[in-house]
Amino acid sequence: MLDKARFPGVRGFPGVPARDAVTCPYCFAVVPSQRVRFRCRGQAGRRPGCAPVLDHRLAGYTGSTAGASLPPVFAAPGRRSRAACPDCGQETGSRVCPECHNPLPSAYCDSPGRIVALVGAKNAGKSTYIAVLLHELMNRVGTELDASLVACDDRTIERYKRDFARPLLEERRLLPTTTSAATSPREPLVYLLTRSRAGGRFARGRTDSLALVLFDTAGEDLRSREVRDLHLRYLEAADAIIFLVDPLELPGARAELADTAPPSGDPDAEPIDIIARVTEALRERRGAKPGDRLRVPVAVALTKIDALRPGLLRQSALQRTRAGVGVLDLDDREAVDEQVRAMLHDWQAGRLDLYLRQQYAEYALFGLSALGGIPRDGRVGEGGVRPYRAEDPLLWLLYRFGMLDGARPGPGRLGRRAAGM
Ligand SMILES: Nc1nc2c(ncn2[C@@H]2O[C@H](COP(=O)(O)OP(=O)(O)OP(=O)(O)O)[C@@H](O)[C@H]2O)c(=O)[nH]1
Ligand SMILES: [Mg+2]
Ligand SMILES: [Zn+2]
Ligand SMILES: [Zn+2]
Image (cartoon, rainbow, N blue to C red; front, side, top):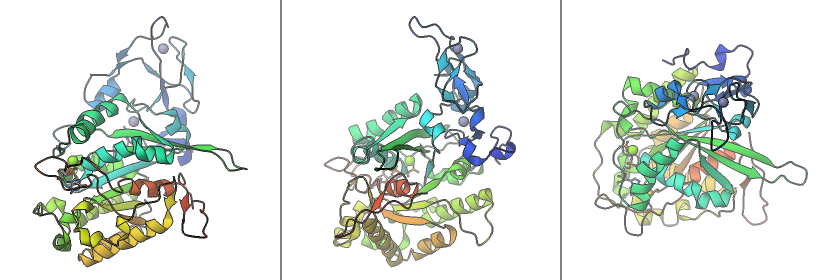
């Protein structure tokens, strides 16, 4: 169960409206903005300041004292962007979560942060997707959207390099199966995706940010009760969920597949079961009444679509390349959604579509490939990693959050403003 004493919700703070609260993307505590704390800048060179001390809360969170010796944390009105350290008098702008002492970047505190969660069965392609999506966002897609992706802490930078980018993108080795969080403690990779937009003639420019919180879960972790609770807290805090589904695990799909790899035969890999398990837990957590649909937007993406027979994709919406000009192409979005739905129905996986419709007020279907080709002998195929439509779910979510405009580039139709929230 949610440990309310350690992770108090705004419920515990009568009179604090939700918009005046920040959800910590590390421990998912919901903290009234005013209670956000600061970390002293410390001493540097000739600049005086507080000496580092062991931060017990941070060490408790990471499970290690390494990197936890830092200048002290102090309380001050957390809604302000800066505060003076009561011990050394220096001004600091570094805000931290009062519960776990992880950094809360200013852009995250000041604009309503959105947490995007990622879930998938064992072998669905989660780790590979995380590696590739982040790389795309830091490079091609980031440039296209004029958006910057910044890691919120040094541990995220190190882990991304060591566990994702180096093996997969540099050495072109497939990533190992993610070990269960029960045996090695897991913490999320936390990034802030920030987009500055010039205002129109009458509008002021604005900066929007989205916290991308990626827990690389092991498929089996959704099974164990204890570990599931951590993931459920993550899912409960999420403002959007991306479900990854391996089409190779869909019962009727295998006949259509070019690949010859056998199905995993792992009951935990059954996509509908995983989605149903997560959904039921979410309903319970969010107190959904029977018949109510969950309001959290979900993107359901078929991974590994490079493994589909080429003939199947010919003439298909998925085969087209998106016109990338920093907008969401709404015509393309609808075409892909329809196509993936049709594929699911062809593969006798229509009940997945039906289930999603019953459970979620809003869901969208995607098809993507992180690798862009079938891997061989534990290595990425020749030509390296060539992602295909990996960013699509995220573009849709940005559109949903009003951070990206939608457009219908067809003839005679001008771009339309996002429906925005
Ligand atoms: N053809 C193809 N295969 C892929 C792609 N992405 C992943 N795979 C295959 O799927 C396997 C599993 O991918 P992972 O990213 O490790 O999957 P995961 O969901 O993290 O798996 P666990 O950590 O075991 O839960 C890889 O070893 C690849 O063989 C892709 O884009 N195309
Ligand atoms: Mg994995
Ligand atoms: Zn926290
Ligand atoms: Zn100080």
